[in-house]
Length: 218
Image (tube, rainbow, N blue to C red; front, side, top):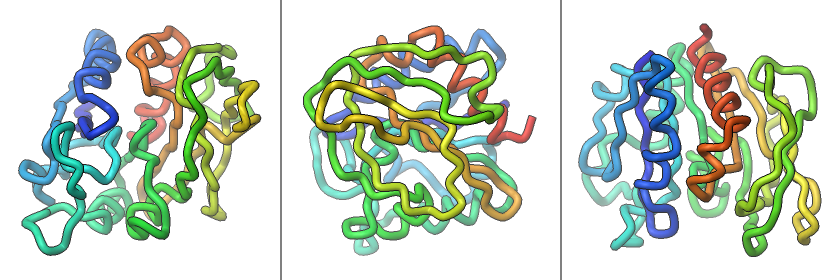
């Protein structure tokens, strides 16, 4: 399976994501990591991959908080291009920072993710557990990690929540994972993943592998 991993922004260093997902390569997933998406991606390029994992908010890079998506700059792949890619039969995973969009600041990307990012408390212990019977949760046991506990307003009517995150913070219990079907393709939201130890947790590794397989319809 060929997987395009998009990461690296002002608050989320790309090395964290690259290191955290690297064990997947031993399981047969071919990862191609892109850290400066605005200057690299084309609509032809993204179609070389079975699944895209986006772990990047609407920021150019770690040293530049200018927006990634800007119609006035040569941004060749815009949110609607990702939507078309999914509807054609591909898969897309919004991982952690990939959910930092809203209908107010980036409506087309929020249309893809199906949620408005509200914020998060200071990092705290978060327990992630299944919230329904879904293939993405196959074999995944509840696990607790220190993470950014995202508060998401899930507005997509077709969102099938399969995982929640619970902490003692003001976030309480939040949807932490859900699936959508778009045309011939599939989408998954996963909100955990700010720290490398979260991504490397054995239960998260099962979770992300399941999400890749489901999105690729394997």
